Length: 209
Image 1 (spheres, rainbow, N blue to C red):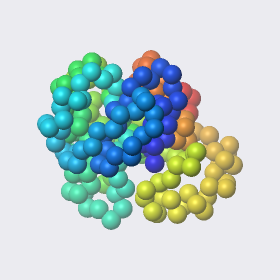
Image 2: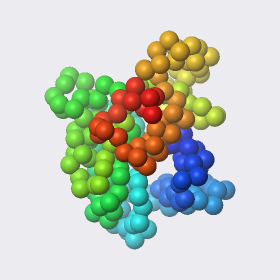
Image 3: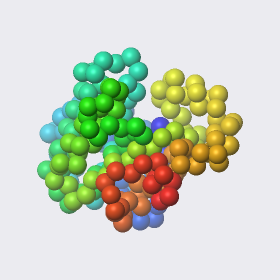
Image 4: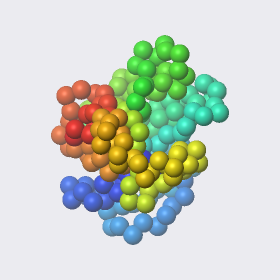
C-alpha cells in the first residue's frame, strides 16, 4: 500500500527522471521512466548488483505486519531483509540517500515491551550506521490510502473499508496523527531532494512537509 502511494508520487514528480522498482512479479508498467527488475530473493542482491548502481535515492517501503509472528520471524522479515538491501546499496552507492518507512511508536532504545517497536528500532539504528550520504526514518501513524490504493494486509483493509468514510473527519480532528499515501510520498521526495534537519521524522514532520 505504501509502496504504491510513493511510486505514484514519483511518477508524477517532474524532478524524478528514472525509477527502478525491484519486484517479485513484473506488472509491465506503462510509464517510460519506470523500470521493473524481477528478483525473488530479497535477502541476496549479489546477482543483480550491476543493475543497482548509479541511483541517487532508495525509497524503501517494503514491510509486513507483526500480527501472528514471533520475534525471530518478524526480525528476519523486518530487520534482516531491510539490512540486506541497504548494506548492498550502501556499498554500491555511497552517495545515496536512503529513506525507510518505519512506524509511529518505534522504540529507538530497543528495550521496550512491544516486540515490533523494538525490532523497528533496531532496524532504524542499524540503517543509520551504514555509510550512506544521508538516511532518514519515516514514522507515519495511521495512513489513509488514496487514489484507489488498497492494503494487501486483509485486516488493515477491513478497517479501512469500515472507517474510510470518516477518515477525513478524523484527519481534521487529529491532523498530526493521520497522513495519506499522497502526503507520505510527497514528503519522502522532498526530503530526498532537500534533506531534513533530523534523521527521524514523525507523523507531524511528514504532514508539515
